[in-house]
Length: 219
Image (tube, rainbow, N blue to C red; front, side, top):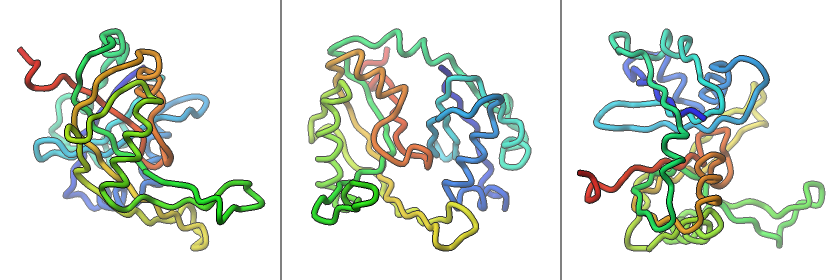
């Protein structure tokens, strides 16, 4: 697998248009790969004043079309790609890592069950307490442990956009960015979470969890 990022020029009108809809970004990401379409995780990140498109994929991407329309023209290299297996091979039980996750915390209400889809109506968690509880509940299933005081919600947004040209196909999702520290409990489950993401709305910039060694552990 590959983890890639490309810096975006926020002053360009084309970039403003791209960022206006997760559907547009999803399309740009999909056009970065040849052959059969596969589900690739992506996220928009801000780091040290720079805005990046971050993508996790099975195949190495070609971001040339994104660079031409949205990239910072004096960037060298144009984008960065690393072999993700180098990180996955370092995962061990008991390790502590800093993490960042943009997710779509939701809950289903079976009291309002959709008889066609055979599932409950989906509601977004709106308070920080609800959102943190949502992630704590999913941590165990994904091979890691969270302590309430060691992570937090750092950003929330409502994203409302059209999936196509029909106004009736409007999509509304709540995105929540978490940051903090986690402890690995199960290698297999955790690597699966890194590879495949956590939660819903993965096509729209949610689910990708990334990790780094806490600063206190850096030499």
